[in-house]
Length: 178
Length: 420
Image (cartoon, rainbow over all chains, first blue to last red; front, side, top):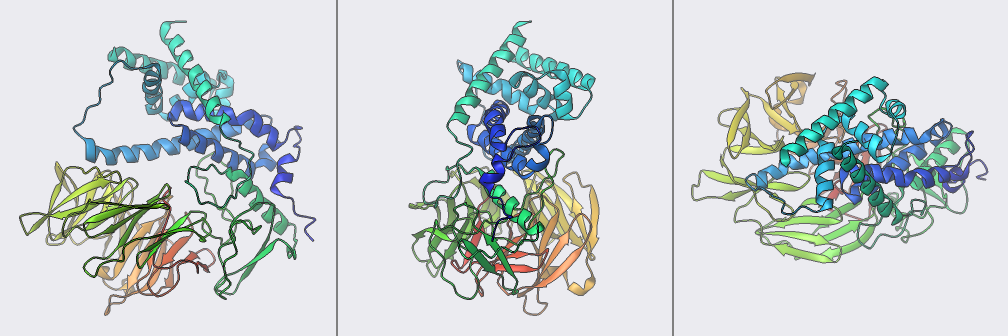
């Protein structure tokens, strides 16, 4: 009766015109997306949520995305959108917490490597969106300028200038903290 | 390469390693669908669920009528429409039942694949759209006569916790539900309720009123020595309390905007944004507050629905006909998650009982009216569907796009979807 119906498991094994399956895609991209989200969000749970939601959306569009030259680039763009959503939610929460801890100052003592990383990526997260995306893709995914430009959807020159501005701003921030 | 560049690259390498370690703990290809009785930490690879939905839709488009005798399920909606889906090898709880009184199936049976609706607002996201009227994909919690029932995303009970019965002096109010934890207020206590039991916290004072509830906590009032004034404070769900905001009794909070309390000052006919340090008059002159979004207050003035920003800039969203009656008979209950739709409860002019629901599209100004039972409480499940609960009928899911309703017969009383 259900001959025309393909199960999720079957669909995930269908090969695209590029010769890869969704399972192949997950195997190659899932960790990368998690790493990207972990770097910017500094929260494992949220990073996994972003990665899984990215896979969900990729799967929903797999009939189109699977035939793209670089489905991973498409997924990275989705992930960056989702990361932005998480950061927006955080901003809202932060405003609320200001009601509670407005006078409290937290000072790090003998910061560990992890807390330095947290501080660094926290500053990255606070960058304007395009600069943040450029930094994350350039350093975490080791992508070139051209590829970042295609993912973010801007000219290569814009990526260069975004990276330059972001580096400058980060450097100034951490110099002033020293 | 300078030192700073080296530091960035080293930090990025640590991020990659951490990402790999985090991802290694998850198998993204594991099917979902365990009966959920444990903590909410379980990771559900939702793409499998989407896969089922995609398959169902694909089958529908291809013109297949899926009436498999085994592993199929028929959901009957209250408007008489029937939808059929088929088992796709995904184990979910078979939960939403027709109003014909069928008993819910046991958890973990092979059952229908719920349709998924997703909203994708930004470039790069696939253009998936709500597929059909469908069960809520959020877990729910229901409170009825002291019995708190946790349900799975289809409305089937997964565990229950018996609280003390509400005392005649105090009502129990279901305040919030997130991360598998429900919060119930009664009298002096805020019960923090997990499926394994409640923990009462003496968090509320005498004559406390709970005001606007947000992601992380709620505003609540405490009586002061001055009988004309009360102190409102934000209290998070950990029990931390922020500095008080002193308000007159005639000043009633109705929302929170950008961290400030949105207040209707009845005597002065003003809408204020109030923090412990500041009072800003947002509108002055007969505006009636409907609701507040993250960064806006939506008010009614002479039949116009107007959106105000904290900087007092405004824009008229739409006009509501005068036939609705005075503003005091309207109560905007919620704005959808994408801030594009608003649900307004309409009360009878004489009895002030809820008699109707208006869904307003804040983007294009469209308005649709629906009848509603008195006592109904409305919450958005997602950007298109509403969860409607009340005292007179079993809770149900309402999809304004096709006016379909799906009753949740396993629960009753106050119901909240899990906050995401």
